[in-house]
Length: 242
Image 1 (cartoon, rainbow, N blue to C red):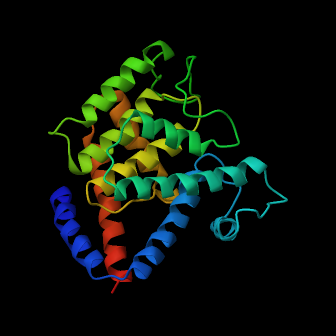
Image 2: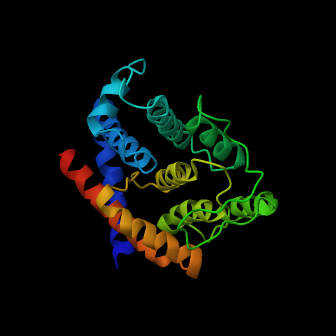
């Protein structure tokens, strides 16, 4: 099965990292981060290109005269958020409420208040699943953090759960998708995997497998989708680092 195949590939990643210089690791990480920021941020606003992201990340003071200021801020904020993920994982800090709120606040820095659970109900246009009432957010999130500490939950399944459950609860007013993708990579890195990104061509399957979890309460479709993403990422990493 692909889950076992990816678990086996994880050791090759560790071995490869052990033999790479810090400069090589930084170059690979930086290139991935740019792709991730482009693909994750464009879920909410696709009015920019990968080249725009690279241009802006070279100098955060640069402007996009033909684009909304919030587009520029969203890109920069996502950059700082993924750097925060890398730093915390390097220190082996486990996911907790403070980190989740801090990451959310970083995603919305200078745009709107972040890091505060929503205080009204949400109805998402076209969605097949209705998020829980805001009155249950603290209860749902408390259970979420408790479930993350379950020793039986590990590997790709734990990363999948962190991502899916945030999208099911929808704890914040905005940026839940960007936050969920950050938490997915946070948990992947903690588990010894490489972070992943969802391309535009993979979005249909991405949303379909998320709905399977929200509606039918099955984590398997998304976990298998994640395993394929991880396998592709590892194989690309091994090829580029030769």
